[in-house]
Amino acid sequence: MRSPWGEDECQQLWDDFLEFAKPGEWGDFDYDKERYFLGSIVTFKNEEGKFEVIDGQQRLTTILLLLRAFHQRYSQSKDERCEEVCRQLNKCLWKVSEEGKPLKGNPKIMSNVVSKEHSGEFEQIITEGEAGEKWESNYAKNYNFFLQKIDRFVGKYLSDNFYLPIRIMNNVTLLLIEADSQLSALRIFSTLNDRGLPLSDADIFKSQFYKFFNEKGRKDEFVERWKQLEERVSEIFASGRGSPMDELFTRYMYFEWARQGIRTNTTKALRDFFSAGNYKLLKDEVTLQNLEKLANFWKQVADQDPEAFSEEVLKRLFVLNYAPNGMWTYICSVYFLTRCDKEGKLNNEEFLAFLRRITALIFSYALTIPGGNALRTPLYPAMNELADEKSKKDVTFENFKFKEKDLRETFKMTKFSNSRAITRTILTWYAFNFQDQKLLELTDNFQLEHIYARNRHKVQPLKKADMLESLGNKSLLERKINISASDYQFEDKRRKYTDEKSGTKIWELREQVASNKDFKYKDIERREMQIVDAFIEFLKQEDLIETA
Image: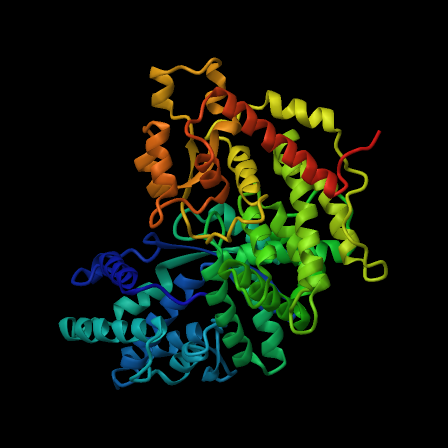
């Protein structure tokens, strides 16, 4: 469950209630017509027969803290009206006995907030009416906030302040929406929620894990492990449409997908996949262990960890980082979880062979059949093969080979503009096709450089204008060098490329300019042919070219 609102929202709620309840004009309130709509509560009944709140958690916990603050203050008064208010508050806060006495050990709602330092604070406040001096959760802050507001309010309206809690209990409306399942409740939530951050898939998965470990009496252990996992994942994955944890679960989903032998090319939505079998996968400790192992693997990749991977493996991973889509991360996740040893380590030679093979296939598809959907056809069966514990087959893609003639024609027909992802993809691969190319850092900022400058073309036009955008005329180049070198003549570019202190780290580009006093049309043609020939040869080495 999410923690309650912050102080700004609590202040707004308090102001709204005061305006609604009309203090100072108590006689003008129409109990039959006046209503304050606080929002909706979306729930479903779980296996234990208890209602779980999917939407409305924050407003529900916050208003319960407000009512508990009223009870704490009014229970200290001997006024009969305040005692009556407390009797009504009892029914809102706790289950009551047949005699109407509150059972303070049984609050109406429980907050399963997954936070080690705040766990249990809500229940303790509701039960005892006090927040610890050193508590820093929003539960404690909000409760103390409302106590202060009520103290001032009671001091201002000495004789009739009891009307406020009565009108909150009787005339503030929460619309209850009861769904028939958690999945339905989540869909309703997605439809209704139009403000604030959406509930991520990982939020739902976290709650399922929490319940599983809580039932085993290992709640604190889980809370600490989850916290560490979130911190690690946030360092690896940039937050886009979903949360970083959603990305981890997505990569893990493909491993489970493959292990189950699913061969359809249509992938389920993340939430639909993990909710199958009443969240069966999230009621297995192995799942959390695998997620932790997978997060560690991708952290090593992001850190370019030389203790985990050889330099050649790190080079291949760098190149794949410039793939036009993220499908490579899914099959790599499957490979890691099916091939790593007990310490979470891979055989570097075997991993290198795998990386070369998937690079050849994925980059060829990016050239010939752009888009991630087409890659499902060869990659999904490969994932199944990896996950087959009996066969332990290597990935070969023997049924997905290319015709050399078609590839050469595709290179000839493709426009390699700087705005197209395939341009950077092929040039990155080509830079690392040379053994002397050193590993580059993933954080380096590379742009695409026109070796024969565009401004030079305006003054000294190439024989064919379209050769300006040819692969033969382009290279990766550090941004800081590209900015200063972009409009210069070749001799000026040459000095900037090869400067001992600030020159480029792209080995092939340095060699290109070192061996040429100028770079003209014939040089672009020659280099373009070298790139195409090298790529075809690479596919031949990986046995992905059809033989006659």
